[in-house]
Length: 224
Image (cartoon, rainbow, N blue to C red; front, side, top):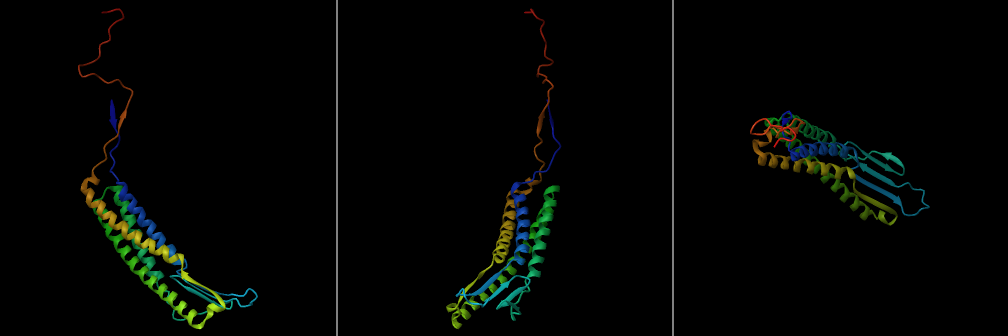
């Protein structure tokens, strides 16, 4: 004899992974905004030099510049990207929360809403990160030009490049956009079937099954 378990809605694994990807994308974007986006440093080539050199570090919120060991104000460097990146990440995270609720309750409209909200957040995030990437590239070219023109590379070890923060934000933005696309494709392929209740699990008990012809007859010992 078998008894069914309580009915539960199916939760397609691909859609669950999509929602988790939105959460990861938002976390990468916010974390990357506080990490260095561009780093430049100049140190004297001679180990006997008393010059501390200079350094420059840019994040989405602030920038730090030092010259001969003292912090200086670097004019003309914009850092107004932290707020739009954070807002975009918050919208993306809100879409993930809506998606989690939709999967738990089996709400198809909720799933559609989550895709729209996450898509908007991903689009804004990708645009903001693209703008930051262009500024970081411009700074890299400018430092390279100044170093070559002035000839500082003859006396200093110059290092300049893109920081980990930009790669984190870029990966988060691309992950968010790809996850939205995969979620839409998966939802369209599944159709309304994902809302059907899951097949109830059959649980076997210890009661003997009754044969189709009636109650089994037990013959006495020695009876033919």
